[in-house]
Length: 384
Ligand code: 13P
Ligand code: SF4
Image (cartoon, rainbow, N blue to C red; front, side, top):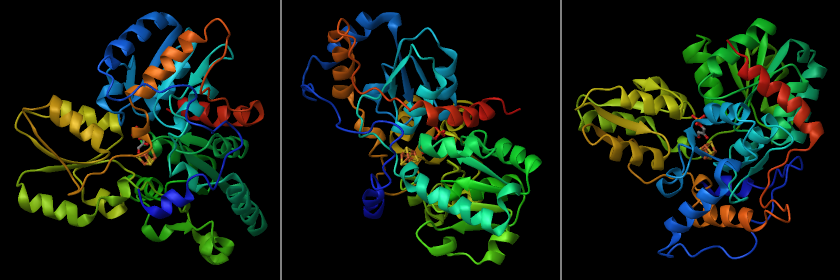
């Protein structure tokens, strides 16, 4: 993660749900030889009370305990579709756990095993900044024709802003449908917070030109744009990005094609536009997995997404040649915060606290924020 991203993290603190100390009590030592046995025992004791959701970027040591694995869309659906699970232990990052809390019933509790598992991209759009941009659009007279589309990787407060202003959430697996839906409702799209997913969807899926997309910089007056530029744009992109996917470069693509003839480049749409435009296949984490699974033995893939997932694919598909697109190692440091000691700690503490009713590391979105955010999430779940 870049230093600037680290500095940005936490500055835009979101009051809509708790984000504090990582955990209380004693974390098991990572070197504890009984850790796996402890996890198996705690999981068995929790039984049907608990459901463990695991994002594809989680470590192997954690993903082995997930009841459902998926991309952020599939996990949001799983949370919405399992009202019987009283405890949802979310092995992923903060914005995913918030969405699960919004989509589940009042009897269900969502637990994030390490509260420091955030997302630097989500933290790049703060509510006060987004509200200021919207006020500017109102002054220009364009807000009424503008539909906000917010990537799942955003705080609950930004999802709430989106729901309140007629927009929808999207994930990397349905951004095209969400943007088409928005253009049926209005003339412009305000896409938050990932400029790359927004640009890649607008240009490569909807056929807009790069000139029709402008980038709103929240740190500059009037977003660093002239009124003319804003009025002429079809898509106003928030200036946010993923520090993990931003590392893949067009040179990586050229290098791998030169070194490994016949290789196919498979990337996540959070990558930069030139990388996505030069790739053979582009898709969400779930789509990346399906693509590799459905490819013939002997096929060669250079994959541009988080390293835990690429390593797992390489291990699972030893009959195929699977390499990481970048030359250097690139984990998502916040996804990696959920490790086996944190998962064991969370499960054992939930068991120990069962009689007192205390719930550790619960992610709870306040009801006012949740109400509008739920509208934006449900619009996404209802997309054709
Ligand atoms: P997916 O929705 O493809 O799982 O992506 C989530 C994410 O955080 C990618 O960086
Ligand atoms: Fe956020 Fe990027 Fe990590 Fe995904 S990979 S959770 S977008 S920092």
